[in-house]
Length: 270
Length: 353
Ligand code: SF4
Image 1 (cartoon, rainbow over the protein chains, first blue to last red):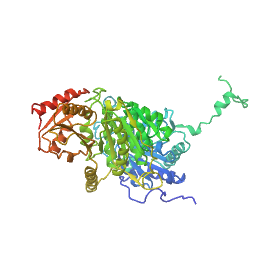
Image 2: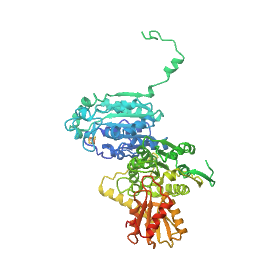
Image 3: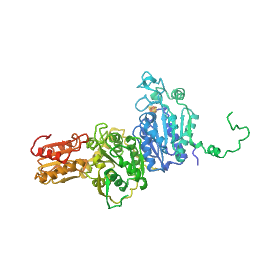
């Protein structure tokens, strides 16, 4: 029987520590729903990282390992390499994945580790109280950029997902935002595709979720959703940057055995 | 692969790797650094054939965290490195201690500080024995003096790591790693099944070092300290050599102990009452082995004086403690050590406590 509402099976019925209006809870739920729907509970291991999601392991009815700051992709690599039958995912924030852990994520991706990476980007360090992150947009005021982030002094926002999509080992890379119902639906589709890339043994799947941090941003939850849409999405465009599932090998076959062109289709550039 | 029971000539690094595979190690994550690279290369050739995983990580930081993941998934796992790489592994080691995960780490020490050089040294004694990185963290440190002993201690290292759920270090040095000696390899043992706490899927197991409430963390640290004390009571062996009637007891481990042993033999040939006390475990330190009527102790090490502190604590003022060592990768000859022994016998120089 398909469950159409209610709590996903692998999401534990415990109060979450996230601030009111924080979208971490939505992302947790989407991950849990996808694990339920793909029936992966018995063979999934999660890797929690450092940041606000440090306690992610407390909310899932799954085996979990907690990793040092930035090292989740290395820990996940260790698990997946010795137990390839497991489905392994990391849940990382932007400080974790895009600052201290850039080496670990880039090399896990370059090796094409069969991992699923849930990358929650809320443009600052939430847990430590709202400092600048590599993903803070220009002009953003944080506790360590009191005058706003300036490119000359603080550099430019890092678009990790586009970077990673360029690596051969990455099978799926997408950026979504959970600021609207439609966005949540797309986010779930992307998370499912990132798990599917691992299940198909195609490579690393990453979903960057633009998330809100009402507390760190100093906004109420509704304004935070709007700020994400108006300030973050322009810097971090949404979309699927890579999906090897949609790459079939028809073009290569066609080059070897050219089929007659259907009527009306140009076979040569004008 | 050499047959079990046969006597074969092997390089220290390669013998350690082979011994690990025979001890049921089925995962190795490492990063190239001289003078331990042959160990990783041997693993790359032989571990996959034994059904294990070899992976060259992007850094020592990543390697030790891959060890964490594999250990958490319940597989016998090891890494190896040399001094600068060991510094990078300290973060991960602290997490391994905090999460109570077993693993074996081989540190083939070289000269420091900084990039230093690739010559043999024992200058990581303090960083290996005082704490495994931040926090009240310790791991057992074993110090072989021969290639055969390294082979034997590798198996013990995995057993101790799993018995106490802590990292175990093998403290080697460039000389031990590079030298070839005859060894008898043990029969291979199959890898053990994963322990019940391992994240093998389907459970709600937690591998974590987080204890947010100070009282909870204190209780966790107290549990760790109880484990440390249990280890100190039972796992601190030392070898006594010609020490029974000795007036001067030389204290040395690993490569320094080989040199000191040769010096002791020469001293005995000259009729001097000299013996050697060789710690086999550096942490916990074999303090009890110092309860003997030796008039003077002489610490010999390949560093600027690091084990010296532990010897002073173990001797506890009952006898003077002198020190002789070379740093920077300089390896003294037995003649130099013998000269230091003679000075101590004459109660000249080098007495530091
Ligand atoms: S600080 Fe921000 S990211 Fe962290 S829980 Fe609160 S709202 Fe969420």
